[in-house]
Length: 232
Image 1 (cartoon, helix red, strand yellow):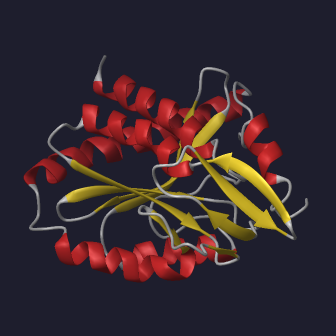
Image 2 (spheres, helix red, strand yellow):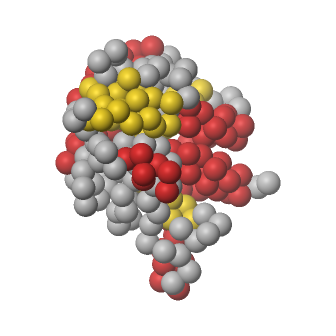
């Protein structure tokens, strides 16, 4: 499989898992890499925090799946010695979340009602593995960012933070990330080229009516989100 096709495969495969989390994904208009994400509220703050790191990044990476729907992963960030994948959970989410990174299901309690949901950290693993297959010499990190309207009474699982804790988390990672990696330096132009190429293809497909505007969470994920998501 060529580089562009391989990248499309790994994002198509992984993004369904990232977007098929509890409460995940609302349709947004396309945005530019660095400096212009069409985001609101805590998502906008998160994007600005990432930009303030002064590390190359892409926001709202979008591709077209085999059904003609547009799917995305929120942020891809180039750190000195690693690539960071950042997914987010719907910013209208509320409740207490209990579970660890090893549990298949978590429990969300809101207004006295407990609802099971898929562990988003485990769902992110295939995306991480896909990146590692595509760039075997690159260290890949991943994080799920939750809104501050959720709490973790038993402590946040490894790989998950609330939005207000993201800045501290990423600066702690930068302290231990290491010296600039040649593998990361070599991989980033390929990632950038593929992301930009994908955006162009999506815009062309949109103009021709070949794709829909966006994709929301899967039916199962949407159903799980109802008890704690903001009503639309």
